[in-house]
Length: 190
Image: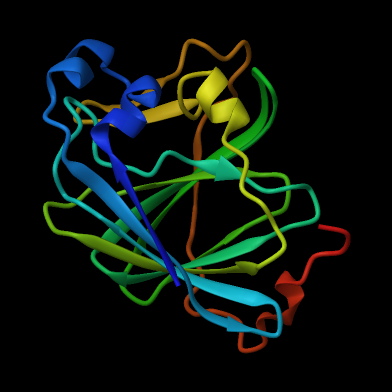
């Protein structure tokens, strides 16, 4: 198992309010425990996100995408979450939606989508994720365009102006439970 911590300094470039981000103390925003379990090539990770706001924005993960062949399943273990999912070609967003989930509910991140996990509550959020261990995470688009195509702030959703085209944001429902056989997560050619 490997532990990765993400501090404010790691996220400053992808936050909504850049001025406020410069004034924030460098606290740990979230921690990822990679490979808590590994079975038949499927890796189980856990992420804990602080409830501390990031200026006018709710705390969140940096966000990442997987190669087209890879999918991921995420489950809320403790707290409440908002998952923002987008399919893009650089600055052109083809699809974007969010899913609100509470303890026990799951979200499926389709292949070719980036996703960000947001903690909208005043308590710690813990999620578990399942993904093919061969699937790398890419931060390239998120870093280049200074975040996902929407930010979730105290005033609601705000568009990221670094994207050229962003469709209207819509909401989808979470899954009630994780599929019993996660072998569908095995990717081909990752």
